[in-house]
Image (cartoon, rainbow, N blue to C red; front, side, top):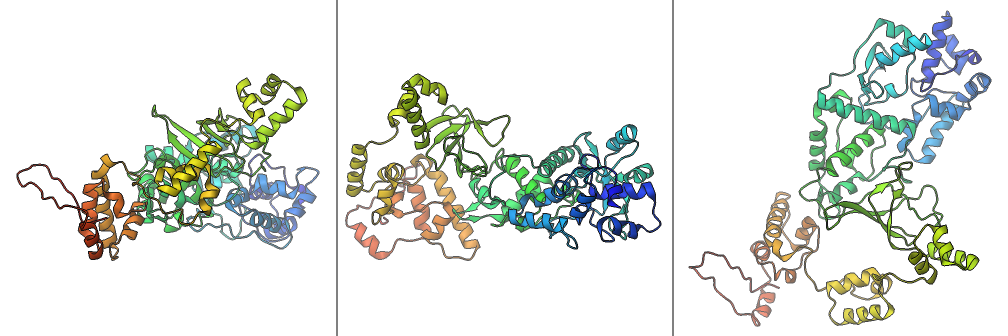
Length: 549
C-alpha cells in the first residue's frame, strides 16, 4: 500500500504525506491502513519508522533511498546535528529497520508544543498553486514561532499531535483556522526571526562558524575567554546565566518553549539543538559585541579551516589556535596558527565558504609550501613560474625556494644568546622569547617555570589592580575561604608573587593588609631596608611597604 502514497513536496514531513493519503482515500480503519503502509499502527510526527520498506515500495514514484527520506522529510537532521556521528548513524539505522524506533533526541530544555504549526501565507500560496497545503518541517522545529519567508507568526492547529495517534491533513485544518503561537513584541520578533533562521540552517546542514569536527562546543570555555571566569579554569555560571536570561528575556524564552538551566554552560555542552542555537546567538550578539568588564584582550574563536591546500588536511580539520586582536589603528582582525606551520592574519571569510579565511597575510610559511615551491622550481627552473603557480609575489617565491626565514624568526646565534641570558638572570622577557622560538629546549630545563619578572598589568594601572585585588578578597571571604596568595591568584587569573608588587604600592598595600608577611621573611628583608615615615602635612598619600618581598 505504501506504493500508493503521493509524492512528497519539498520540506514536507513524512507524517504529512501519510495524512494527505488518508485524506484522499478515507479508509474505514485508519490503523489498518497505517499498518499496511509502515508496519505499525502509528509513527512519530517528526521521524517515521521502517523507512526501508517505504523506500522500496515507492522507488518508482519517489526515487529516493531510505537515508534520503530521513534527510529530506524528517526532523532527525535537526535533532541529530549535535550527536556524535556514531549515535546519528545508529538513529538512522533504527528509523530504517523494521520494528525499531529512533533513539532519544535530547530534548531536556524544551517545552514541546502539542499542536502542528503552519504559516497562513505559505498555506494560502500552496492552495492557490497546488490545490492543497502540507506540514513543513521548518515550521515544526522547537523554538520556531515565525516563518522566515513571510515574516509571519505561525498559527497552531487546534488538534493535538498525541491525540490517539491521529493523522491530521494540513489542508483540512487550514480551512478551520488556528491561533497564533505567541504574541511577540517588536524586539522579540527580531530575535524570533534570527532564531528561526538559525534553526532552519541547522536542519538544512548549512555551514557556519560553529561547524567543527567535534560536536558539543565547550561554551563555558568560550565564556571564560570573555571574562565570565573565576581565575583561569572556573566559570561564573550564575552570572553567565543571569546575562543569558537578561539578553533574551524570561518571557520570550517562555514563549518559544525553552527552560533555562545550569546545564547550558556545563563542560559537556547540551545536545538539544535549540539550546545550542540560543547559546550561539548569545555568544555572538552579547559576548562578542557587547563584551564584559573582565574582557580578555584575545578571545578564542572556533571552527575555522586552514587555507594551506598543500598540507592536505582532512575535510573535518579545524584550527584550534585562532584569536582576535586589535591593530594599532583600532581595527579587529584574527590571527591563526596551524599545526602545519602556517601562521597568518585575516579579517573575513570567503563568500562561498564561511569557514575558510580570505585575504590572509602570512607571517610564517609552512614546510609544505616550501617543499611545493622547491618542486616547482626543480621542474621549471624559474622563480617567476613558481610565483605564478602558487599565486605569490616573486620575492615570496624566492624565500620559499631558499627556505629563508622571516625577520621575526631568531637565528641560531640569537637562540644561543637567549639560552645564555636565561641561565644568567631568568627574566620574563627571555622566558617568553625562548617559549616562542626554542620551546623544546626550554621545557627540558629544570625549573623552567621559575621566572623573575613583573605582573601582566602595567605599573600605571596600579589603582585598577588594587581594586581588583580588593574585590577578589571579598569573593574569597564570601565563599568562606581563608585569603591566601594562591586563592588570590586564582581569582585574578594570573600568578601573584609578593616580589612582583614592588612597583605597585597600592596593590601591595591591599595584599599586606589582608595577608601579612611571615615574621622570618620580615626580619630578613628588614636588614637591607630603611623605614620611611609618611609626612603628616602632605596631602598626597605615599605608601611604601618595607617588610614584604
